[in-house]
Length: 319
Image (cartoon, rainbow, N blue to C red; front, side, top):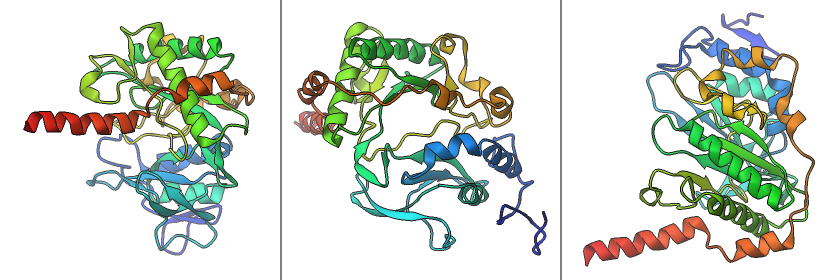
């Protein structure tokens, strides 16, 4: 439908500049982004609904930027909430992408990436998932991330837990572990650290929990810091990268045979058909044992440990 300004509108949202390139090197237009997100709405909105949302936007010829605070021109019908952002140490007014209209508005704002929190707005004291982010070393190292994902799966099985796996849409892999609402935020963070440490012990030549990059020695970083109010890119979200890859669910039996480039803004909808593999493969919420939490409590918080180590090294260099 065309609007009076010569643009188009969809579901009550005015859409502009649809046939301009999404960003330099994307190989797609803004229309492609809008059509993809609208086509996948019944699958991505459940991942975003009720969660404080950060997005990564990009304009042609400019650097991508993360938007947490909603801009002043945000329509009144976009639901929002104020929430403490740990990284910036301040309260932020986040959007809640609960419906098609809000998703289309974000798409028209050139919001390419969608990063919801692991907590819901109505229960900010509890995470819904533990997440292990597997970050391979530089280069074409996705197969190493896949190998590390299998270590995480084994560590989870040893703890009586199950997870679902997806590509990150970049070079890595995300493993999600749905949990019940008994875990306090600190306990969830501790359990995540314990799982990461167990995965590392299964194959220390492949996996590492070293937060400082120079200490990883070419291994896959098993990142356990995605906890509390942290965000993780949602399943089905595009990424701001050449070709616009998509964070895509894969089966544990299939992950060895895929490549992140298989799943893009142009291919993902066709591969999905009518299915929602992320919802279909996600286990039911699980109880995390006190043993796993206690084990994790004894492991230093990676960011804090890295901060102290960085200061120690700086003092050593000055000395």
